[in-house]
Amino acid sequence: MSSPSIIPNDRLDRDFYIVLEDFSSGAAFRETDEGIDYRVLMQNLLAGEYGTVLRVVAFNPSEGWSRDASEDVARELERRISAEGREVSEGLQDFIEGQLGRKIGVQLPLPLQI
Image (cartoon, rainbow, N blue to C red; front, side):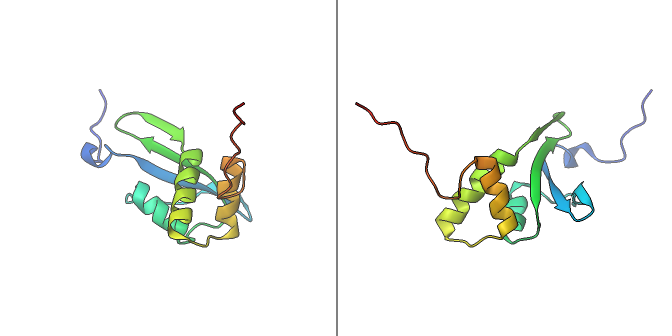
């Protein structure tokens, strides 16, 4: 027989995000509080709260899934940077460009129709 959880399930039934960051001593997931949802994650990334972002992991304990959300986050960051005309840190720019495989704001050429 398992023990009941000490954490209320309603607090776990949502998506959480954690950031894998490169520190001088090596990569580590930065400690986060329970309040890091998608909106807060985007605000923190754009505000320069993270130095060298390697990956962003999303998970939902109640639904039992986790995934690498890095590319989706990079696309949304690029969209917001372009729409708001923001300047970003070199570390965040490297993360976005590494995930997208191109420079920020550069559209891939469409093939010519003949």
